[in-house]
Image (cartoon, rainbow, N blue to C red):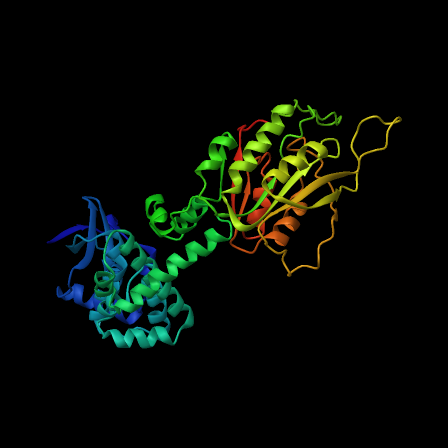
Length: 435
């Protein structure tokens, strides 16, 4: 549909204007002559409303009429999506008989690749064969990688939408094996990140930020497991929900059964829940439950105190082999009877095993005294340092293996597990309150 509109109604999009590095004075002069003789063609536009039109093709003609101080210009209106304006502008430009410079061609290729165009679509825009476009792209490493990334994302999105690999191959001019490889690489990347501690929420956000339409439902089909998260609930009710023989290492800091309350002057906390004789019952029941969830060869660490070691050790021995009692030297001491007692500078950790799991050889042979500064207890009255927990995790697991803490507290074990590239699962009975 052709008609005349005021020149001031024509909007020039910067991206379309940049197709040519600069306007040609020779071309503008030719169009002035054509307008004066009445032989010029209309410009190509997209109509927004009756007083707004986006210029697609005709920059030199528009400039020629401005110099002639004309008020109106003849337009040809086409209805295309906004995302197609640039490629249509390039395609129309090819019909003017003025070759693009190498730099202009490179800029256009980059723009079209950034828009997600395939080699087949780009070839159509330039009016050449797909092999010619492939050759141009292959000579530019940045373009080659960018186009590959765009095609990969587009292919994955098509599969996520329900299309079969063969259909996607036809859409993007790829072999079916190449589409299968793209999909396999996509799944393997997700699985690898998940196995080294990323949450499902983090995986989804990361892919969405990169333009992949990944949904929780689609991710659950790829990764049916549901670890790398903290569950708020009673460990005696939540442990049975875990998969049998799935856990490689358990690290727990259970209530000590001594009615503990921190009196550290800068931070004063309420007494710890279940930190009485009920705590020993919970420990016994939880160890019985978790034993079946641990692999045949696995480790468990239980933080304790010399004051209750005589009660905790027999409970642990009912379910596991107690191999050692580690001493965590905190390089600091707790408050208490400042003048009538020795300051306490250490805590104990029972090291227990199920089966014959060996300690990691990637570190030097561990000793049963571990020096590690305390945290300062800013988040939790009995908070354990991530550095200490990382050492235990590295000695007892490999990357991708599963660490469980069902007295998660301030989640230091979970943080350490993620930091060390392990899968992790936490259970804590209290939400945002102190343990």
